[in-house]
Image (cartoon, rainbow, N blue to C red):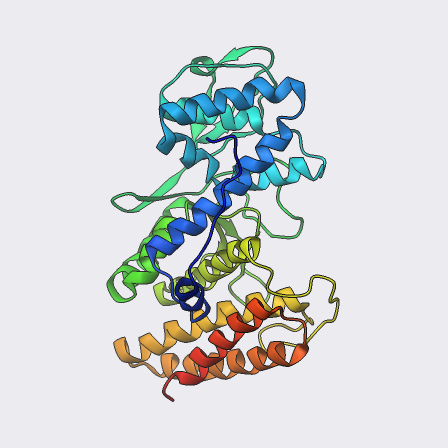
Amino acid sequence: MSAELVRHALSEAVFDDLAAGGGGPDVARALVCARRSRTVAFLRLLAADPASTRAFAVLGELHAHDPVAVNRVLDDPVAGLWATSALLRRGMPGCLPHVVAAAAIRAGVVVDVREPLTAVLPSLGTLEPATGVVSTDRLRWKAFPAVRLAPGVTWTLGEWPFGLLPEGLGVVAAPDLGRWREGLSGAWELLSADHPVLADELAVLVTAVTPLEPSDVGEASATVGDALGCVFLSLSGDAETMAVTLTHELHHAKLTVLMDLFPLFDLTDTRLFSVPWRTDPRPIAGLLHGTYAHLAITAFWHDRRRIASSPRAHREFARWREATWTVARTLLDSGALTPLGRRFVLGIEEQASGYDG
């Protein structure tokens, strides 16, 4: 890990491709790398505390020894959200010792950790509390349950440190792991067979799933922007529904990182707007996220019309193409977009209007 800040850039062609709902695994890897840099920057700021300076230095040494192992920990959604929450002083203790311990275990290196350890080891599992100076080979932890979807694609269904997630998500306390493995595997098989680019992007961007309770009207899903890599969703009744939910959340994740990199709208604009997919009015950021995610849903059903030729595919495609185009026009007429944001939304509008009926 370099001590210098890393600059990230996307070409105009890649930016425009993302606006149209594209990308691919290489672009997904670039987005993951960009978010990793943010997490490292936050950890570096947390290490300004003299008690944590040595821990950050150890993390750098571990990264030099085994960057793949350490990057897996840095990319974990728990690490990203925990670092953000600790930096913003949301009542969370520092996460650096947990990140260092997890990185050492993954790298196969024994180090001493000098701060209290509780809750979880990012990317690994739940941890028995430990205090004082503790060697990582003496830590007791239990691996998160996981679903192996394909060679090199395994998603964990793990726990979160108490108080780290936003309130009101409706996280399932004790999910039925058998049902979740069946549901996720069915959705993955559909995506990898019929929508391989989406599957490739999910394989890069997603490492964890957090089960949610269904909402009053059916399935539920959510995005926690600082927890890149985790999809929050309820169990669906069929593979197609779960696949489209994963697609929807994938594009929220892509846009979240893109908004880290580029100013797309006026952050001081506090207006709220009605949207076809929610009952509550949404701010500009919500409009942009919703429009982009529903462009992905439109594209999914556009392809399903050809693959499955079901009444549902035709109905959902028509519904979400119209909704996406309508809210894209609202964004373009709002005056809240930056020049880059306008270019991005014009790409969404052009893609939505270009689909055949």
